[in-house]
Length: 260
Image 1 (cartoon, one colour):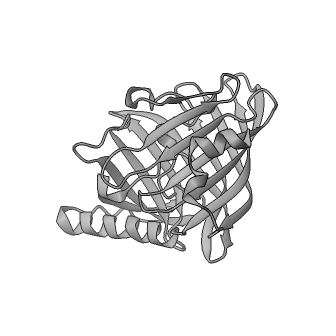
Image 2 (cartoon, helix red, strand yellow):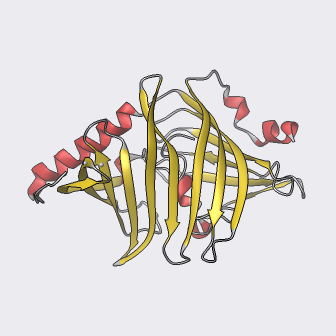
């Protein structure tokens, strides 16, 4: 999945003075930063395998493996996420069709009952298959559906970052009232996102182990912390490839059924 495919927006460094920006110039600067980050992360397609480790509040660990494919970008992509292990979840798949002017369409395929079901908008805030990612977090976020404001320049884990506020525009349905993004100045890669419901911080995503893959700086570890449940999901990305030949027909339930 693209870097914004999990928990997906396309997923900031020493002592710094908080410099607050106001007015339309700040909004323009913030949007320019986010759009540059998206531009640098753009590819025609993406494929990877990954390991998901869910650590609950009692430190019980469960592990799953999945494969992720994406075709397209900039809010008009299609993606398929398929669990490959353990046996009890093998074949479960999520098909996401993103749109530039509205929320994505999502369907879940469950091979045990050989049936797909549409994920309704009111269910997008729910946990995705026992992980700390919600269904909404797996959408590719289109910058045109959000307003941005540059709040400060801060250090995060030794990296100089821009701190940017993101709010959904009118008509964009989201469980989050606003989010804070930390974007690394060095390479425009998202370092952290905090999601809020009004004044309550509900989820924090951290993007770590950044490597250059065919000219695209990409996090290879993503940690999602659900602060309400006090649980974490750690996604380790393996065998990442960009611009892999894919067909539109691969992103249909007919193709998913044939595979499983």
